[in-house]
Length: 95
Image (tube, rainbow, N blue to C red; front, top):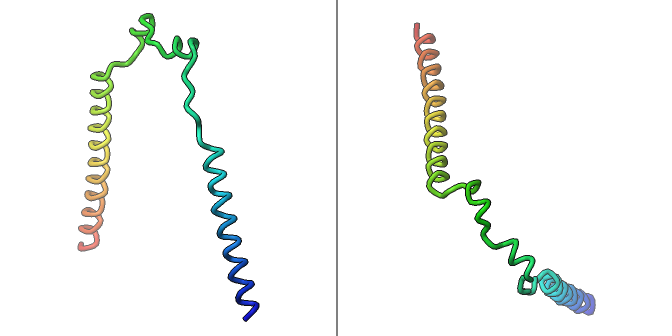
């Protein structure tokens, strides 16, 4: 009986130790909000000289759509080729 009591207190000790270490890890990884300085604000500001090099949302969306359509066409073509090969193989077995 004493062994069971020691075992349960040992388990509760590990549980409480695990929880406290988990909390300390969480607290140490938590980042504190710091206002950006003048240099950081200047770097984050929009630069008019770089505007011609930025991709615009419309062209990016259109390019994504073209890529999606091409992907679907290629996959459909592959599936069709697999179907045709399977059908010709089946007909060859019947003859």
